[in-house]
Image (cartoon, rainbow, N blue to C red; front, side):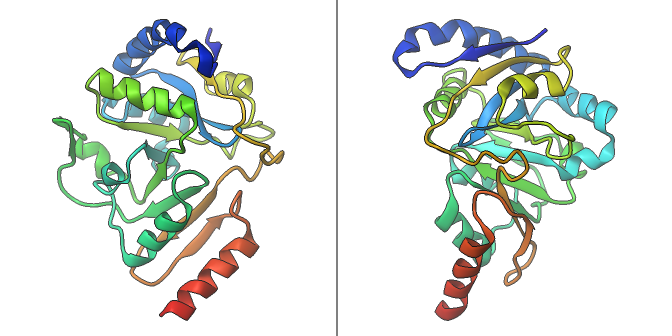
Length: 239
């Protein structure tokens, strides 16, 4: 059964023991829970491990590829996976890091990060690629620092179970239990950076952009409909 680690910024000397455990999870193609936005969590895994996708397919079926999220701490790594037209660049500049998932057209051809090649047969299954630039919460920083330290690619695969009825994505305990204790081994409890939304249905806003001029709102969340209307108007006025 998995367990929760409550990270405290003033106790960094104690983190190494949990990262040693995380290394085993990462290498074995198992899952863990990490913060993905203010007060919210996702299930994460090693995106370069084929066993991760085999387990996801077994549990959730082929439609799982539409819900997977590539998470990194640097935009340049995410740009390897998708076409970034001007519209996508404008959204990224305005709302990243944090708060926004960009759903974009996947790139074709081999993708390599730190000499690690993303499996081509896996990449071919993505009808769309969802990208998230992690915010600067100290737990996110610590996780990506650990990836760099271990010479792993600075990229994680996230799964955001928004279709799970009644699931509180702001509760790391529920997230830990939601995906099966046999596979989800550990949850990193980040706490909240600041007061965030209490709703369990609107954690992140998702925008889909598949051509140069069209942006489709897939999900309204932290970035509200009113905020998006203002942003769209600013884009129109600038053109």
